[in-house]
Length: 296
Image (cartoon, rainbow, N blue to C red; front, side, top):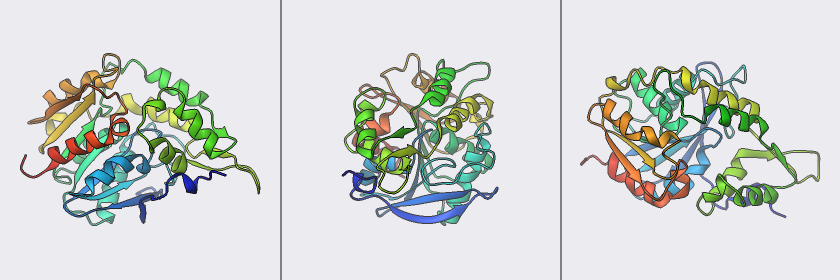
């Protein structure tokens, strides 16, 4: 029998649980390593463990930390179970940095995670030494990413429960969008993103983040001030993206966003899509390491 615990033989070590300003408990994760600290921040609907591939590679040069953003993984939900206000993600990140005692760590974020990093640095300049943002969700006023409504609708329709952990893994491996993820990432996603369901003896598992709540994250994307404040950033920033699907997704804004951030640069991966850090973790880890190294 495949259980949630058996899907990931060597999960990250749990770090301290941190209390956010509004009382939400945040789960932190210690990926080990030696060197300067870096904080990895995940995308909507995922969690810290989906950085396993990137983190294992980066641990050769950095002390790697990550955390589950509110509502995700084993962090607590927002009090109202809504995520329309993205400022809470930025505030949580600052609380985590302080609680872990990190002095100007580097930060790497994917999608929502990239936006969280940018917002946190805007709110408290000097928190981070450098940022690497893979397709951060930063939307110009009056525009959308073209698929926001579809993402919210899809989240509300998302299948919540599977008869077993193995069935959930097989389902996600068999079809887009998660079929493109690197070996082990789907297992990590299920292991930490699902919880046991049913009574004693049941193998059923269910999503920790209900689809209806995930939908509110997508709907909140257009209600931030992060775009208007990009010019305030005064640290090395790399805005990266995958070229696959970039014409209709957030990858099409990579160069534009980099142009608005003083001194920033853009980076493209021709063989990756929006899930780049989970599709090609080794390549993305190398790129992050190069980008956040002090010699840059």
